[in-house]
Length: 115
Ligand SMILES: [Zn+2]
Image (cartoon, rainbow, N blue to C red; front, side, top):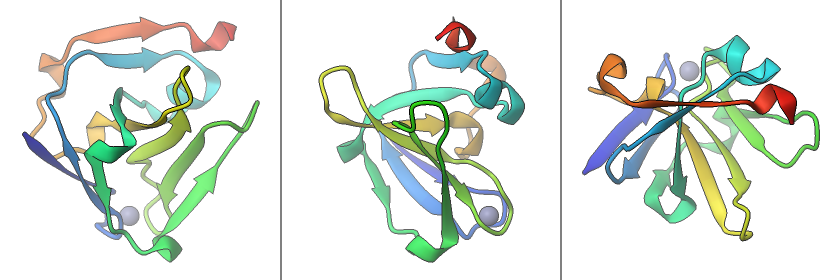
């Protein structure tokens, strides 16, 4: 199914194709501060026509993940990176998707703090 996503103010909007399976709850310094719950999808599953000037990008540590956030409201709807095989991948923050019951999702803890 198609999931509609956005930041809080609506300057960033996007759609994701697919069924949400497990979501990853990472304990690293970045994810824990933002409360991210991540669903990983191939980049081709995401349609994003947000004007570039509405999005900021934050990187840290090895600077291999581009964390995109809304320049107006600060919400982080997704991040972009490459998976272990080098394929473009998007980590969608399911908290920014419409109609998703967060409590019903199966969370997989990820020890990002130890990386
Ligand atoms: Zn916004």
